[in-house]
Length: 419
Length: 165
Image (cartoon, rainbow over all chains, first blue to last red; front, side, top):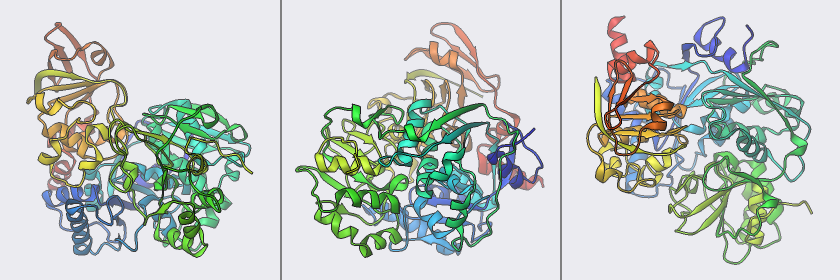
């Protein structure tokens, strides 16, 4: 029987010729990732179990990104735990304030992850790296601890849903609108336990940043992972960036998919997910007058260069509406620096926005943009659960950087129309 | 092994942000975290939960973040078991890895009501609602996962595996 891309990568890392959906396997890991919230729990478990070394100091990545620069004393203690562990075990991929980025923007940018990898991360959005043609999935801290100690993780081989993408996105849409449309279509558990395999001619029309964004939110449909085939754009992105050789896997012609869904990219419209689930999607144009208090442009979903560019193109030379707070968070130090060099940083400030150093901050209601009761935010982040960005009576609407920036100018949720 | 207690009932898509809000994730201390278990969905949960009690919920329980703090606080509060129609995959993994018993049983999740007195036998997968007198059978875990549970979690099972080699 033919295998999907995901199944082939898992088989290769398990040392097997073939795997089938439902099979339990033990696979070798290329990278084990953790952040400042999940690593301290993993460190406790690692110590409690009596492990004294990591399996490979070059295969563990610890990125401080959720609550840094530290928001309070307890958060500082958690960062300290990570720092001391990384130092004690000579973890080569340890990234602290000043060097770091939001982990899922940062690891691909730095070439720490590559095509053909098998990756676990103690963060649910670890599925982002599927954009590179890797198998990559979120796990908990105990899995991270076991992964750091042994370099191995157990997996149940997932069955797959194939998304056949055709056509080309309209100019006012991006990868975010694609993935929100898909989640709206299949629901927050529509891909539960499964892999989302993207295929079709339309893929070539999607930028790498679009693909990262699409794979990033595979978890919001319940998926184990999302994955794109490796094409010229992927190779171009990886070239000169990765420290390890990429391995290219292709799905077999006769691979089995539980379901195939056709997506015509030319039919995608600017889409917003309304509170309190990412599946509550509506076209931005149909929302009516929804007044907002805050705009957040950033996160592991949309804090990349193209997202900053989209925000810049809409905000430059203009001013955000009265009474709106607009927070822009470049995903990595490199992206932040680029924003400064290109004059975008100044343009954001002149438009009335604030620009932060990289952090997950407001996305998970950590700090840097918490909402009060009754307040409403349009955000390029990934979740709009009850209380996600602050008070349980606040609301988060999820959208693309184009829609978020356009909304900042009007004070209402506004579809971006190219001028 | 079994657990017995009263039922706390919730709907579909109970996410990890309501199980343990991120504003409290500035500590890895389970006891401290557990004071806020289910806070954003049920403010009285922590006050009312007693050892052995059971959470019954709909589809996709534990969706969202990978935070292991979620199953950890549920376990630390004394909850004996979570029964749901389905679990989000990372929560499912985390619960097994830290030794929080979970069972998938759509029929039981539909029919059992809040405050019912329920008994769960983990060896047989039989769920008995003492209030209504009805019994249900949950899907048993694969042998591989049963071994992790028997050992008391993933790391303990790895250690046990090491000593067998």
